[in-house]
Amino acid sequence: MKTYKFKLYRHKKNKYLHYSINASASIYNHCIALHKRYYKMFGKHLNQFRLMKHIAKLRKRIKYWQQVGSQAVQDVIQRIEKAYQIFFKQHQKGTRPPNFKKCRKYKSFTLKQAGYKFIFNNKIKIGKQVFKFSLSRKIKGKVKTLTVKRNNLGELFLLVVTDYQQEHIPIVTGKNAGWDFGLKTFLTSSDSKSIESPLFFSQLRNKLKAANRSLSRKKKGSSNWYRAKDHLNRVYEQISHKRRDWFWKLANQLTDEYDVLIFEDLNLDGMKRLWGRKVSDLSLATFLEILETVATNKGKLVHYIDRFFPSSKTCSCCGYVNQKLSLQEREWTCLQCNTTLDRDANAAINIQRVGASTLKLGDVRQSQTAISV
Ligand SMILES: [Zn+2]
Image 1 (cartoon, helix red, strand yellow):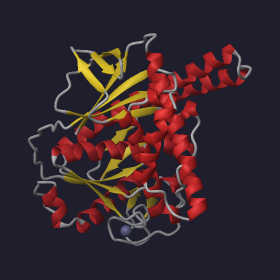
Image 2 (cartoon, protein in one colour):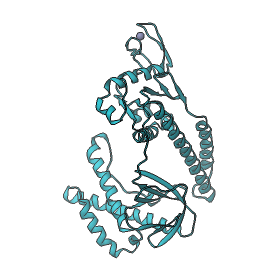
Image 3 (cartoon, protein in one colour):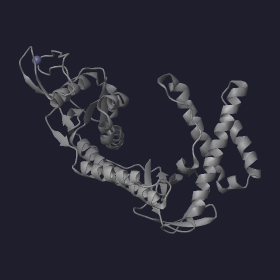
Image 4 (cartoon, helix red, strand yellow):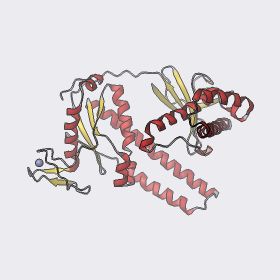
């Protein structure tokens, strides 16, 4: 599977796609209302196929809804179903059921096999209209789904998912390493490498602050306010693009160098509570997601250890556990063996050790690499 993202050229016709997204939002909200009402009346979950039948019938009468292809309607219902299934499984953890969405916040619709056609190089027919997009790279493989998505600036994108499988010849290096995330240094490894987070992050953060300040000075709803809001959204977008770019490059670099990469299982909510906004700035979760994708493609492995293992507090030389270690201490001396330990490097060594010992042979075989654990 491979996903391509293309930007649509700006054109008057694009308003039709905006209509379609808005109509999808209307269908979405109608379905949510039906789900809620059904549960209230019968105390049961509304079956998605019954809902599909009902909506298909209703769609014949409501002209506005015909803006959306029938497959996109099915996709809306499937999205809701998926959200409900996650809710059923994880409601103890505090997951909420899907809820109404403002039209403005509703972002996309998806078509499967029908309802669109690629013509020539960079043109696509969606419904009855032809749209032009910027073909930044060639589409390889058979197209599985097409999603039309808008961002906060009202720009439109095509997300094309194909069945293309990239072929990688696995480079076996026989190396594995444990990695610790930090606030100052992005990653520290058990073989004493450190990867700093790039400078442009903090530069862009200043830009973000300025944009936020400028917005707060404007009168809400005025045209200056809207302009400032667009600017703020553009800065957000810039940050996210730069960050993702850097993540992909780093993920490729690390998976070239190591066969197995070991991390601590993240408790992001807990970390946010402890350290505040900064953690989400570094967006570790996004990085790990990208790293896992790259690793799978290359036949490498990302392995996690239990987050309750005290990786920072344990001395990597003798195993003594320093219960008094606080978050602020960057360095500490072991009371038992007198070694001075760098907080991040010490944690990385522990993560590597625990990770390597909990690796199952199956995991390794799955990653098609032979490593010396
Ligand atoms: Zn020690």
